[in-house]
Amino acid sequence: MRRIARSTLQTAINLVFFSVLGTAVLASTFFMTHDAIQKSEEGEKLKLIMQIVPHDLFDNDIIQDKLNIPANELLGTTDITTAYRARLKGEPSAVVLESIAPDGYSGKIYLILAVRANGELAGVRVVSHKETPGLGDYIDIQKSPWIKGFDGKSRAVYKDADWKVKKDGGQFDYMAGATITPRAVVKAVNKALIYFGENRDKLFAPNETGKEKQS
Amino acid sequence: MSLQEYKDIFYNGVWKQNTGIVQLLGMCPVLAVSSTVVNGVSLGIATAVVMALSGAAVAPIRSFVPNEIRIPVFILIIAVLVTVVQYLMNAYMYGLYVVLGIFIPLIVTNCIVLARVEAFASKNTVLPSALDGFAMGLGLTAVLGVLGAFRELVGKGTLFSGIDLALGDAAKDLVLHVIPSYKGFLLAILPPGAFIGLGCLIAWKNWLNLRAQRKSNTPAAIAPIDAGCSPATHG
Image 1 (cartoon, rainbow over the protein chains, first blue to last red):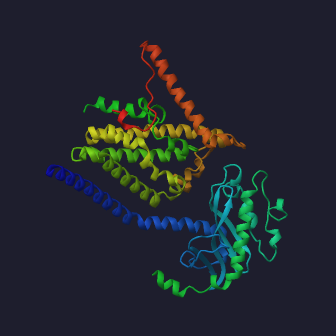
Image 2 (image 1 turned 120 degrees about the horizontal axis):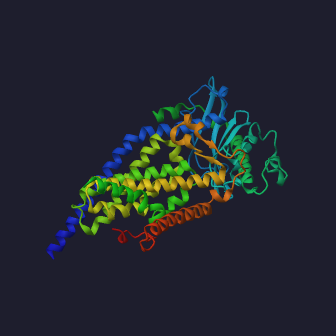
Image 3 (image 1 turned 120 degrees about the vertical axis):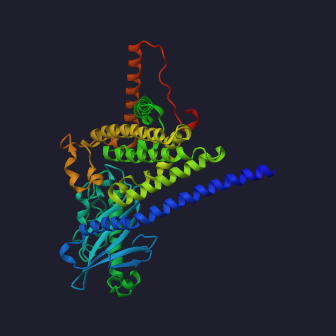
């Protein structure tokens, strides 16, 4: 009996030893790569933001001028997202919002959109999606320029009925055989613009308190 | 170990016991990631690195680990190594990390890694174990590369698309548009293309084996194919 107990204990110690060793290796790698990972993630985000926010629209550090937005039905988000504010000489010029189209053909479509201060879309991009390759994936800028059709559109020009694909009587192009995908994107963009309209002042509120929290 | 033995280990890993088309272990990444050359080769190399490291890590501790808990300890070691590789890729090859995404953590569950650790590294010294892991990974990389080239060529008419994700923006010019203004053949990109392509590769390997046998006139059977995920059948 005592022998069994001893060998059990030895085995347990052995396993614990390897777990601790493994955790130590992982923790040190995590700390070593943490800064680089954050930098590349921010770099990637900045690249995306640069694509949709015209360069002459801001002179501030967009990545740092951020605002947390709680989950919102109009944005389709279920978690806190981050909005980035573009400012020119201190005046708000555009805001970058994240939005989710929940009703894509195969799951959620993650969008990022830049709205100018006057409510006009500066640009929209799909961040990630699982739409069918070759059919629904033309919403991706790398596959087709379709998504650029949103540039310059606003709810001042297009009414609710216009925010649909042409097949449904709206103003937006689609490709035959894949209407569910663009329908979801158009709907999500419209809703995000409604959100912008309702929360404009909050979105552009100065960042003083936020800045202190970050540093 | 003599030089010849090292050569044998290498030959075994890359060709004779090729994981992709002979042992048929690790089908999940082979089928899922081989849609382009760059994706396939990148994940192949990541797997080869993990296999070499795990072989080298398991060999020196093989006599300390009690038999009963060797599998959990091996898996723990493999999981740690994979996560380290994942962090490094996330930090220094972000574009590629985004593309390979879910498949990097899944290297842990790729049974070829555990199979080689269990069948080889737990019975051999550090250097041969590392070489065995690396050679096996290299064999897998080759299959992923060939399959990726086939699917990319037939499906999109290009080669090396997305290479800028691996080598930086300067490499963008390396993308070959083999067939200009190609409309694309979706089947090759989608999962069925992977199955069909892999089937052709296996058939080709078997044909080579048979031909070699007929030449040497030895009445041996076709090399056995180990399907499934049981390391116990190896070794």
